Length: 400
Image (cartoon, rainbow, N blue to C red; front, side, top):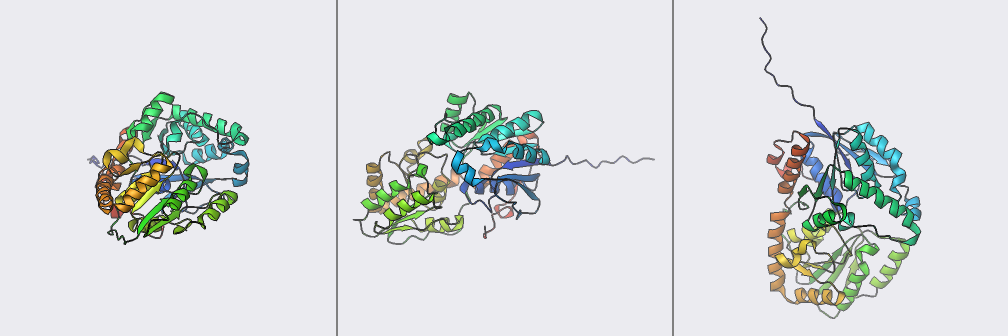
């Protein structure tokens, strides 16, 4: 007599390919967020990375594989956004993984390559917008690099039009996507960041901090101008944190920094170090020409630090939620910063609101569960139960 086997056959695990920097090596905010997502999904999916790097990267996570594309930094300095030349490496690497899902925040020709592969296979392409510039029309950085910049943008636009699904960070990105490309976001979800376990410890001296890589679009010279205007106020420290830029640009900025009293440049720091400094700070200043949704905003808000921003204010959140100021001009930036320096009650109220807002809209568990549910809905990936796992299960190791 045959006994019928009631054992259910488990469906094969989906293969997820991330076209992204690998966070333990690339320590930017976007890379950290992708890494959080990876750790959240890893028990349910096979994870593979495809990253720009000059050498092979050894994965620090069992079960995660990494392929690399040569960066050719010298050629990039000459030609600008030359990513179209990566076509054979990218297509070969994707074929080797044979993914079920490709997820990327890239707004380069790599997005077009992923779209091309997805269209030829049963693979899904999910593109996550990371900057307002991603969904804007072509603008050239310099006359020298126009041909390659233009080619890269055209290929990016091909990827935008042919991505299966698009995720946005804020509504204004969805508005631009509709206006410029006739697409709409399939999901809008706020950026996520781990909530600090330790309380903030702020001293008497007001610390005004600026955090960004040193490059023209971040406008570090505007913060130096601000620091010069704050030198007449007692008990104020201005702190700049960021990876050094090109030698000539960096040298010019540092020569200016040395002449500004109580301005300290700390260079590049790890995310843990940045968060420790933010926990002791009182005001975050942003001077970027454009961003997506700045991760530094969220890091600051979780640590009760209001934001004063020169240009960037996604969906008008600073004024609407009372968590900072959108200044619009250098004069107003100085006025708003001085107001917060001199009014500790206002700083405290804004800081309290900021932390509540971060918990509500940028919770790691809440937002990652939304992404995981989206992956499950669009691909059939079995991620049920991911939402119930605790943060300790996939927390980022401290030595990263």
